[in-house]
Length: 429
Image 1 (cartoon, helix red, strand yellow):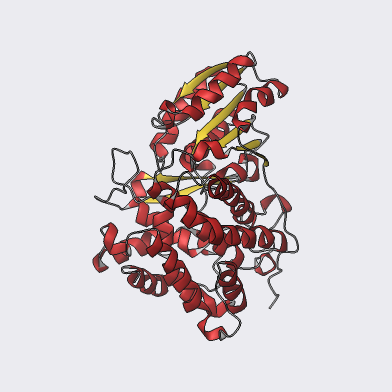
Image 2 (spheres, rainbow, N blue to C red):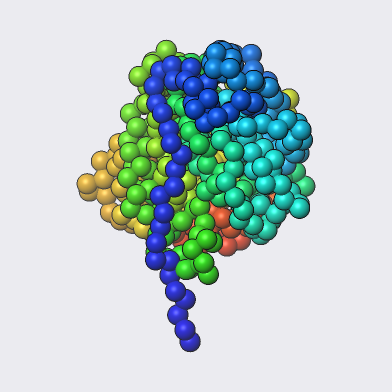
């Protein structure tokens, strides 16, 4: 019997980023240098009324660039909200796109750029299998400049766009290196208006991104693809991603609580917007695994819960909450596959692991995550956002198709294992 060949290579693919207070004002110059004359600015109804968008529009006008604003991005976007934005953009014949907002806005802008520039026969053609066909993007997209106003998703660095597929009540997405923004402008001034709950949720997303990418199945243990063109954006843990993920964890440990509890702490806010991109570089190339895979049905099936600090007209478990609520249970489960890595992640988060036994790696890391959850006043488990044991079969069913991420777990998890982890996650402490 022939052995399955394993992957032989990994690739570092990341957007250019520019960091500094006030760099938003440079967006017009950048687009003018790219030859853009007609630009679609994509944002949400809240950011549309705030200073960051005004700064962008002033910069575009000063550089002779005609701008149209689309301000109907949905927090936690859906296939329907993607399609609405795409339909708005299609007739515009835009040279480039600008995203001003959080991950929902940046992901929406990626989808708009893709579906307007390289329209497929069917919406699901580009969507990750097994839900969609996962077809490769056939050519370069138009310039996209991403200007984050939260410190969490790292979407300004990645080739991934996530959305809720309404009919499945679960998140899925599109993953391809060509989706990456051309440039991310990391401006700490743009996060001044983040409510505490938003800072907490987005910061915990950074934390989980970094741990998941560091503990993901190593790239060299994945099957060798039939062609180099078929290498996924999420490749598994690798030596380059490791560097960025661990540094993101060190920054989270030092600055997350400060940034969430004191919006006037300029040093902490600046560090967290950098940490989001550091983690984005890590997971954008290594991938995430079970906490994200399990988070998608948690977000998709929410019935009544709405988080404080989020101005929405629909039930919402913020992405960072839906991820972190599952994380302690997951890392208790996965630690046996790579206890050294789980301990190294705990150490980066400030735990003294010198005398910790490998058998305790999962508990130690889970306890440290739970400490952050308690300090930042996150819901105490899935029960606090409306789920009970009777919902677990539905949550498991929603997780199973998330192959893009679940297959990167360092320890395989089937229906029984997922059900046990969801049961553990009903109450965090």
